[in-house]
Image (cartoon, rainbow, N blue to C red; front, side, top):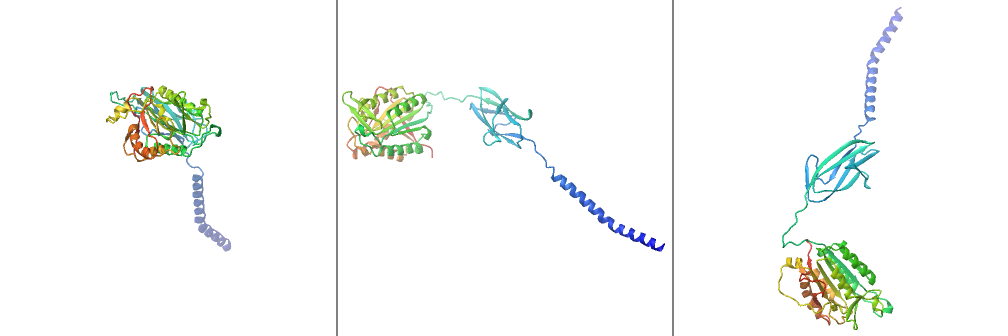
Length: 383
């Protein structure tokens, strides 16, 4: 009897000691379970769309602009499958970035509304609404105003000629033309995309390019044409010609001055300046240009139509190693005048060329193509 009681007391004592430990393990186990369950179910954010550009376009405010076209740049955050972006109910394709969308919106005069919708599985999950007020830009109607145009250049140079033409190859034209292109693009208001170069090309190449320019140029634009290469004077017709790389002994392969002047006469550009470094290039004038040294306001020269030329000589041959183009590029590099007239450029190059050559450069209006006493102005870029 005493033995049974003793065994019961021993078992009870063991259970009393072990109970807190067991309960502690159970609590820890439950905590681990809670922690594991929490980590296994992360919070998932819903897809959203943001307007990145224009930054000043905001919901609830009227956006005022004088630009008829606005480019919208949108980004999806937290993207998911089966999503679409609509602008005014028109679906927009994503860019290569995947989460970026762009759309060009064209305003009409007055009030405009833009609605951007984010759709998933056919349901709209986000929409943005914007109000735009478009007013046409104010135009300066002053009689003294000059509408700014773009500056274009066509640079033609030939080093190489066919053996059957009987003309020797030249060393400097392409080199000089490349240097001229660089100074126009870096120091003056000629965008590189608006400078066309034709090196060792054919007569047809030049004629096609002139035709393209005639269609492209606007009445407020400016065009510089530069030619360096062989030239020839036909004594029977008393006409001067440019000899392109495909020229032969046949006159039908030559580009006549009359072809150039016909283009200049038909071209809508306000200002055209022709610079030619070739034999007999001066035949493009009716007579040598009268150099008017009287000062005139730049704005008046810009307003009036001009058709001027600067040539390396008159109606005689020039030396093969002409320094005309080298001096031309050097003077354009060194010029510090914000507005440089073609006449002033001619005055800068005349003496150095004459001092090192046997011919005198010429400047003047091109005959019978509509010159109205304006002038071509080289404008320095803002530094």
